[in-house]
Structures are given as structure tokens and as C-alpha cells.
Image 1 (tube, one colour):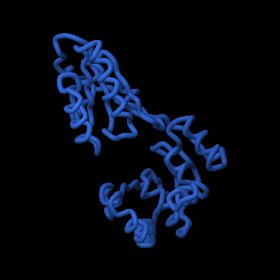
Image 2 (image 1 turned 180 degrees about the vertical axis):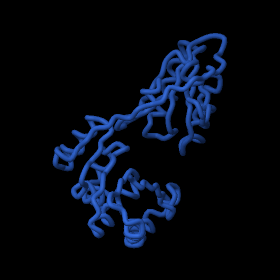
Image 3 (image 1 turned 30 degrees about the vertical axis):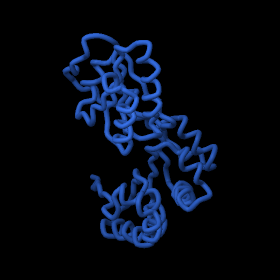
Image 4 (image 1 turned 90 degrees about the vertical axis):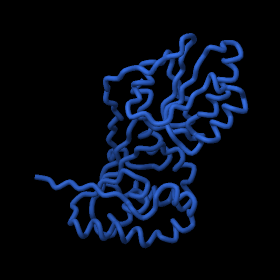
Length: 239
């Protein structure tokens, strides 16, 4: 019998962390102690780290308490590799070095970690992301033209501004082509401004968050995913 418990870090939300990065680092000892308390109070025999906070603070806490832990890489390690000689990168490196098992979401990600951070390859397990296929009623399509869709966070590194550039070029020659962007993110307002300033309001639509992305995908003729880097994105799998 196993007692599995799930906990979330409540100290700093993502937006707060981005705005107060210095404070985030100043709180480092406190956050490590938070994880030490969590491990000790629950008498955990194994700690699974799947978020950035876990990986930065949990690895140190697990080492202090001598609790074995599994390090799960959900994100692209390229950003971490580029910071490998900074504080953040060193924290990741420490967590990786002492992990009992490293779970990568793709073979490419495993090779990236192994090649750049020199981890023992025997530690690695590859578990690819999967997607559930859900029934969905397709969204209403325009009467004419192709529908080209994107699903993902509206962030610059997802290539969303490249979609606007593509829409500008395509709409000049094929004015009935439509681009649907499904998702939310920090770049949403800037994207809307770009759409309006380039006269693309009839061609590019921001659909926001959809509980069932298959509504948009089933109505699409083409799916695009111009992300700058991703470990094992779900959206292409769903498409």
C-alpha cells in the first residue's frame, strides 16, 4: 500500500516570481526549509519533483533529509543549459546530479541533458507525453477559405509573432485564409495590437482558452506550431 500526496508551492506565483526575482532568490533558504518541513512532516520515503520550484528548492531539501527523489523534466532544458553557470542553472544541476532517477519527456531531451549537464545515462527514463482524444463539436468555420490553427500559450517563445508575420504574407495573396490562435498568455494584448495595426482583424482570431481544444482542431484544415523550442509539446500530438 502506498500513500501518495500532492502538494503545491504556495509561496510565490509565477507572475510574482518574474517581477520579484531578487526577492525570489533572497527567499531561497526559507523555501528550502519549507520543503524540508514538508518531507519531514509527511515522513516521505520518496519525493517526486515536477516543477521549477521543486527542482530548485526540493533537490537541496531532499539532499538535507537524505530522501531519494525523482527529477521529472517537463520543460525544455535549453533554457537551463544557457544558464548553467548562473545561480538558477547551478541549482538545476545540483538537483539533477543527486537525483535517483531522471525522467525525460523525449529522447531528444534526454540527450540534451546528458550532453550538456553530463549526467549518468543509467539514471534516465523516457516517458513521452500523451494526449486524451475527446469528442468535440467543431467550431463554426468561415464560409470560404482555409483555417490554420495554433494551440498553446501565447508567449513569444511559442512563435506566435511569427504567425502574425505569416498571416500578413498569406492574406495578401489568399485573403480568405483564417488563422485561429487558441490559448492565453502574456503576449495576448500585444498580439491583439499587432493584429489590429496590420489590418488582420478579419484573418486572425484569438480564441482564448478552450476547455476542449478539439473543437478548434476538428474545424481546422492546417495546424501550425512554430515554437522556438519544446521538449515534447502536447499540441502537435493532439492535432
